Length: 324
Image (cartoon, one colour):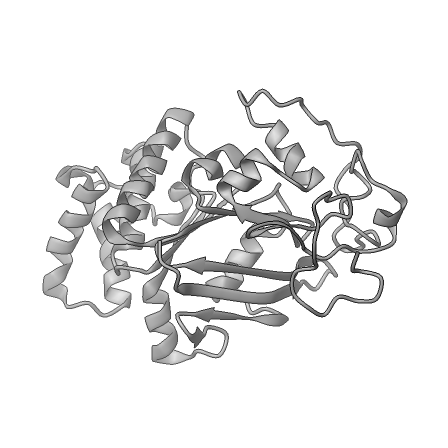
């Protein structure tokens, strides 16, 4: 992993027409060769954040910079070049791969879009399939002729066809059996070691993210509530929501934390901390003052007033009453 920042997103915000603020001032960075896990339950804003990073959605506010280039301001050939270097592995390869195209044609389509010479297509497809553990015969197979694990390997090969610097893996193993999940995760690690590619790995399962990530960013109700190294977040979670997610991970020996109530309506979020209506340890202040990210350790930040080791607010621009 390099110290060089590859992707830098600052204060991304997205509100949809129904009034739902899906993403609220989210900031994150990914360094070259690093894996950042983006975690949270369904509806917390993970995929919307990813779509803004990929320029599939335009943020209402905030900026995305990829290797020094403003993604939001890019057009035409510059945008095509960015997308060549910024690829995605979707959640379900059975729907992301065209059922009328063979695996070979799906990978070649990516090469055609990015204007690779036709004579390179065949050799490149063969190398990619071999690298992700598929046989040459799979090149001419249709999606319905392959298993879920084989399809996800094909989707990874398609994403790697343009030799990207960053791959966004959006719930890339959630549709797979546990044994196949492990195989695909190990494959992603091997590819990163070989190619130096960076990953933004999105999941609702912290145990999966812990296996592959260098750093973890936890989201709740459109906001980042905790971020830090995978070891810090896993071994010393600071935010009650992160502690709840970890308590649901099987085989970890933690006491199960059961939240009360349902997640708030994102179109009408509660005042103060967005988690306080479900938090088992909330205090009066949580209902009125919205916490900023607070430093709890080296490169470990948490958005909770009860953070015992909080030393200083992270960033600037907190509204009155938002700093400890």
